[in-house]
Amino acid sequence: TQLLEQSPQFLSIQEGENLTVYCNSSSVFSSLQWYRQEPGEGPVLLVTVVTGGEVKKLKRLTFQFGDARKDSSLHITAAQPGDTGLYLCAGKGSNYQLIWGAGTKLIIKP
Amino acid sequence: ETGVTQTPRHLVMGMTNKKSLKCEQHLGHNAMYWYKQSAKKPLELMFVYNFKEQTENNSVPSRFSPECPNSSHLFLHLHTLQPEDSALYLCASSQDGAGGPYEQYFGPGTRLTVT
Image 1 (tube, rainbow over the protein chains, first blue to last red):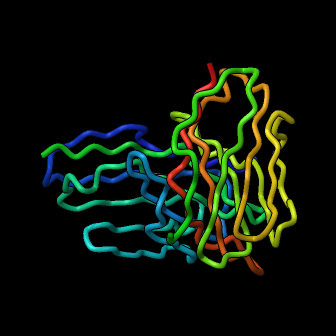
Image 2 (image 1 turned 180 degrees about the vertical axis):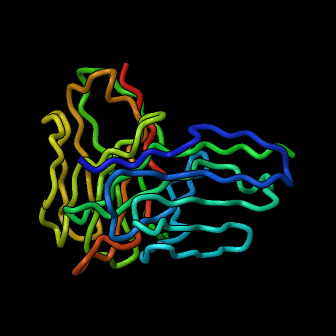
């Protein structure tokens, strides 16, 4: 069974601080997606990483896919209250459906 | 309307009631999904429809019954639910193809409470 574990489960920091959240598995994924879900809304795709070692930047967000394509990280620089939300990672499983992590709930305090 | 819409947004039902959740996508996608989201748990894929044909049923109890009359509409019929079925039910759509799935677009969800 393919599983994705996200850590930490919960993170609360002050505006302006940097943070990193992780998405780890013992399985290899052909691609991995990161979504952000705000309260009362469904998840929205932020990025898809496909190649081992790939780094993608989205403004202050930096996404990295591990060399072995088993793990990924999301780094936020100078966090802002608008970054608050539930961050979910999802990998494309062997049956071509998405395997989801449980998410990291992030709160940025002004 | 744009994107993926879901109705109702909130639903409270007794264990003996019958209700239906509705999802509509305005994106021209060919695949639609029902997910269950519970606190601190990964999204649970319930059903997948591709070109109106059900392609996945992940051991979902028969008290949940999906219906996909066309590629834009998806329903989830509920009957004799249990309190543990209380959760956020999310509908999503995607343009599926070889090597898929690709980006999934989600609706806002229906917050279901079973009393």
